[in-house]
Length: 303
Image 1 (tube, rainbow, N blue to C red):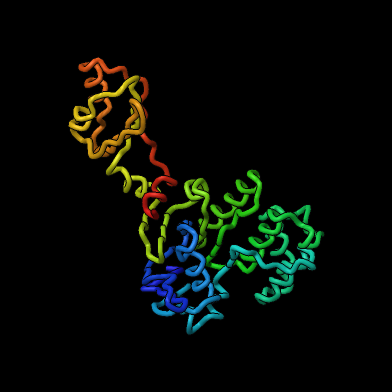
Image 2: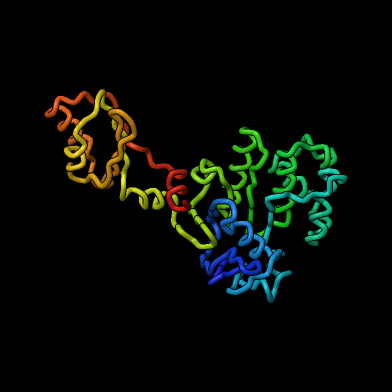
């Protein structure tokens, strides 16, 4: 296992930012680390990358403890923080050479490694420019290149597509997905489409605690225990008859002739609704079943 977190807690004074969380991340796996603002995502990532010490618990990266062997951890990690710190007066090509030399890459092979990163992250036309003159999207690409240049076993990405245009997002997603085939990738994002596009597994944290940890498809199944149906009739109806249908758990009036019904997700009650409407001469002018997606699941777990 590349990353092993056991009972991790982080306190800021009296505030518990991370509350006893435990999880593992494996090579060949892209893990989406999700949560609302202030949930503890960035704090956890900073502890994994040795920027913050834990208050309690243990974090190991490639077998090295973040407290006892921080330099060994850093050698095995590539990190792109949310606010990407770069030397704005350096040229792109120069900066990547500098970062590679800090990681003590072989001088003979370093130029080729820099070229590989420039090609991988789509920086060919920008490599001769100063970083300070680049758009935010291209600065993110430089940050991704520096996080990968030393060929780390673990890649930690905090909001890696911030500021990218739609075409750039697709390209960076592909880089992350390809990287995840050989390495362990943990990245946070608020863009649910990214998670659906590239993640093998999702960990959701809320108020410092893990509230979900599963493969993406299993997370969809997690929320199928209930289903919401939206109904519209051309007039008020007898809601007691509607509420008495098998599988109905809750019924809410949303205006004249408009209703929301929460049902047992294992039962499709729409045929029963049509039958009941026909028997009572109700004119049903609209019926829609809520589609479960990652965004609605995230909201349900973090409210």
